[in-house]
Image 1: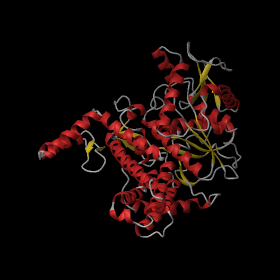
Image 2: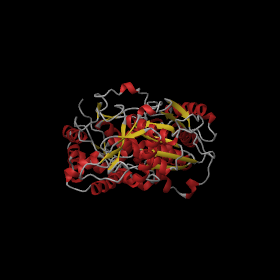
Image 3: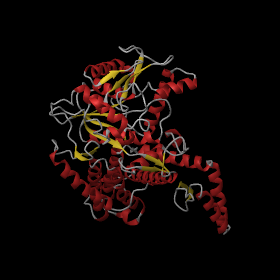
Image 4: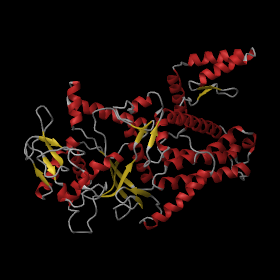
Length: 542
């Protein structure tokens, strides 16, 4: 969605900065004013890592189960945590960002059997596809990407320890279950009580379990399935245990700073993961000063499609590549950034149309402004006393940089951050195209400052920022507009020529018909200027 115009965004960011500063006043590093909403405490908290030197941050985000192409729900998760990764890095932290792959699972086995291929081949194919999707969305690669199958020894080590400590038990048939009754704090993260998990409703009935809510740490394998030797026979890991084991192995058994994922993972995945790791590390013992398994639990909100829950059964399930075949990945990222990461987001075609339109305006402005700055004569760039509009421009650039930093430090308020671009873009357009702007003393210095503020904001939220990037994005947006419209460039050229002929013949009805026909397809014909046409949102009937 398009950011709201005008200076109010900066004013709102200033207010957010004041709130963030108050919340973060107890932080060990006064120069860093980051606050994050902690799912465990249900409130925003000042961020202070476990590192006593306040330099290193450990972050683990649950990755995908690689049996299919990633969908827009995955896009939301990894864009949100990419922004967090970038924000922490910009604040000077040395971040170890770990995002795993679940590469052994019932769904993987089922899909491989359906395809008649080996599980390993299926996994490698979809890991490669996932990486392609993340690159298209502008997500930075994490520090490490552990896979469950490469940590089976760690999974067995943790499972055996849980059995020895009385928190887990082997069952008939070779499965091993975690005993939720052994941990009084079970349910603390999600707020659910054990009686909420009534057998036959949310939890499958299994007579081998001591409690219907007990969950599998180790599963006995069936013939033809991937399997590993264990004290309980051939089998494979359960879903929840893999993250506990990989976190322990990757971070050396220490409490980690941030654990994240989608809101759908709070229960059961993260609740069960917390139970396993708490029991394994002894955090549930009487030593009250023991650090928790995770200091900050961070979760993003759900994705809805046209106000309905996204699901394959409803036919409203979209993969990232299905979306980016018609809309640029940058537009998808912009759309996701336009809603706060914790709020539910409503995915609609209209939202993507508006995101594409806003991005076209943004990158067109940035490209034209960069051309003016790069082409300025030496005397224009020389130091001059700033006056009028130029003085306002330099002040606005500083104000924007402060506002964006404050917005992102306030629990990653990306909607406010990108809304802060509105005024700088408008003023850049004034400097490029209006008589007053072109004559402003100190114009080039002001434009440089504004371009810097815009590009730094784009960098901060993971959007392309270089001049060459702007040209590429504009070209992609135009090409995909034609794809959606079912038109070629030759079709548009012919329509432009026909409209010109109609106008010359004073057949304005025909001229308007041609304009409206293309406009209904998202192609806006322009009168005057160097641009013959540009993409525009398609207004769909409600």
